[in-house]
Length: 284
Image 1 (spheres, rainbow, N blue to C red):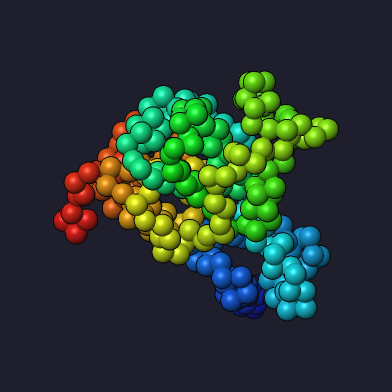
Image 2 (cartoon, helix red, strand yellow):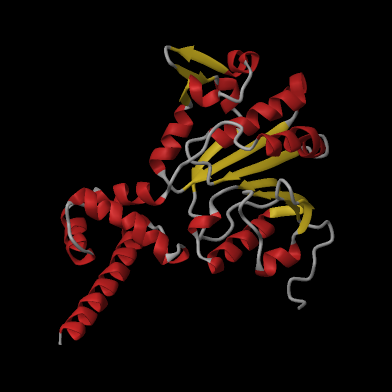
């Protein structure tokens, strides 16, 4: 009887867990079905502990009585670990190889930093764009989309204020050129922000951009299920123009259909390309 009682209890807890996922979607529009259940359970557990409730059933009641808790839950789902010029070899490849090719071959260049967290990646890209183009940037049309699901992270990104120690990979000349010191902080100069468009995007939804020259989505896919990873990667493929480039995180790999349609350009820095002559995605 005890084993049966535990089984019923586990079943009820699983149903409550599914109910929490549904409530998150109904309240915030975030589709949790794309995340691995193991990851969701770890992140939800943080909120259960923080709110002092014992199980998902009680947490449902807490969410109903404290709707502000939904934003806390979203914030914990979106882990924002990033820094300026993280993975120096990737940015070195961008500066020496990809960006010159992209920036000088199109009248309007579109770049997308997907999962930008608090903005370090798009600002790092903007710095490289200024360095590659120099004074010629005034005559170039460049749009850098920077998206994330976390509203608080995006607000920090738009503010563009960072501790000086977060800029450790930047030389002093670059810090002085692209930032203004404010006590212990450094604020991104306005001219660097001009090409960036911050936006809230759930990567589980359909592709929102077209004719993109370069997409970076690094160290984000580990939070999604295998099926969602493949769906998102195909959305990126469809967002790219023919010949466009895609960069993933170093610990991430393409599987399924994305692995077949993307062409590997440099495996050491995880650079892929949408072929100029698209592979027939329907062909086995």
